[in-house]
Length: 160
Image 1: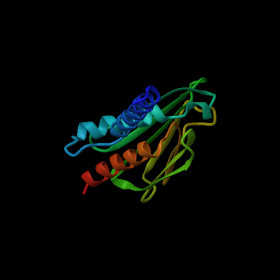
Image 2: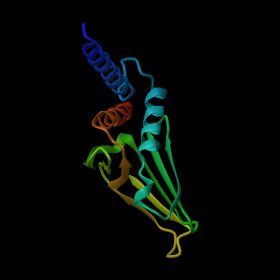
Image 3: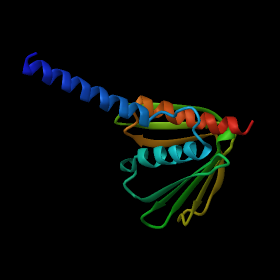
């Protein structure tokens, strides 16, 4: 065998190993616990949130609870806060628009099930409800998106 053939074989094996490692990290295996799903959902949302779409955003926090609540808190430079909360039992659909670099995760609930609150807003504090929450995301590979959908469906099914 020639050195160039060995080099190509090693290169193919390395690429295959990288592909397998990435695929496994985005997918769940049978027997994943509720805590595994909860942690995965939290990590995925936190790592994928695209802060560059809102230059005034100072800080954001996601919370994923064992009873299927997802909460997003956004804090802005001048003290304004936005808070969104919904239960995945009320999830109707999840859509994604964009590409693997950046896009929007659109979460839709059955009715006005998403709580929206503002605090420290100069126009006044507002409490409202909506059926759609748009979350700007980045680095959303198809496998990662599918795994997030799978996690959402896991929690949605837990409520039945």
